[in-house]
Length: 113
Length: 117
Image 1 (cartoon, each protein chain N blue to C red):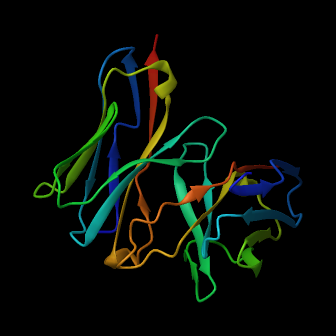
Image 2: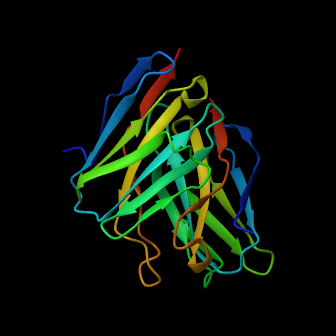
């Protein structure tokens, strides 16, 4: 019940296309959902995050869509660029996790020029 | 002005050796973490530590031990290194996440690439 399931494991998208990464969780006590971006050779860094009281959050080309009833959330990258090529992690946190981040398995995104 | 720094960046060593990785943060955070990232990029929390509590992932072998000389430092000691310990180890820090502050961002260091031969 503490898991966050992330898919796909890897994704190749043409430049200018939309990249979509999906995550699902079981624990309804999770109440904060961040996405982290990791470039090769670097540590992960916070990209965007959402609380379950909203269904969507947008920051530039990056949007999180949140479906509370389905216990799913997804990251959309519009007009994907080669510089977006990275590994993306979804995560969740809440009382049941003792406020420790529970991480998805990661998605390696490659944007083809 | 590196926020979270780790040394060394690369560590190549023989099986059975004991090694340490150092981590320092200058963000004034009160909680620090160690993660292990394997070749498939999976991030596994090993330890979470603040001045009140050490939370250990129960799957971490007791050959791994965190040591915190002060709030800004959390070092990782590894005894009797094994081939399976080869991975990238990340240190991170944040303000202590609580019910009121669950949105605290974790800031990661650049990683230490450990290769055990």
